[in-house]
Picture 1 (cartoon, rainbow, N blue to C red):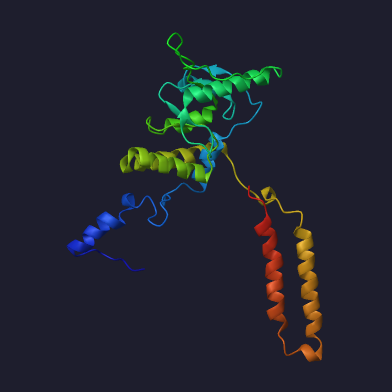
Picture 2: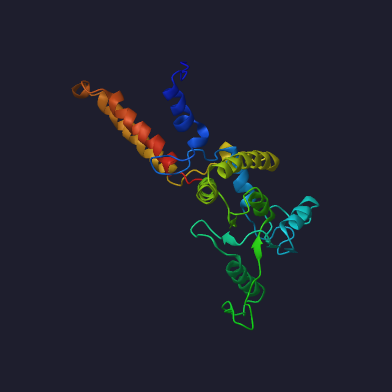
Length: 271
């Protein structure tokens, strides 16, 4: 393996300015992050940012994320329990992967109305009151989230919004891109280091793994394999005919086998 040393001043300048890793966070082709979480890092961040209905301590109320951390450590709530937490250091929230940052008070009002509807099926959700001179309006910063999402957002710079949804690989890349657009390169590099440490730690503590039985085969797998086998049998039978011996059976069987074998995998749903 060759090792290239930049000897001239021009080559050293190019290595520092153009080739150095901190200067190549985003692809010049499309602007997407080159350095993005993958594998165990994504597994850990996605695990802690998912929610689950009916978990221990659901809908408990906490005055700050730190209170929620303590409640999780002592076993009062679970990692994926939906809880109400007051956010004192953020002004905006990203509620899902298709929305941009929104004021916390707007999301808080919407979630309160949904929770009232959840408790009373006959309740009719109300519109958020408009601020007036006599009444400042609804200013709450209490949102429905999980302690895992609080843990993830705790590593983000305070100038970024609170990401309140499950973060797969694309979601983590979005967080990186938003941080770079808001705070620049130094903060983004720190975020990448923190996200790597958090992802590895939480995926290890979760004890998650994938086995062959976790892969879901499509219902059409047997049909596709049968069709491929029948086609291969026909080609093999035809090859024994003296008039068809000039044509290689292997050349015909190989595409049939590869197609029947690849189609179930390509149609298998992602997990």
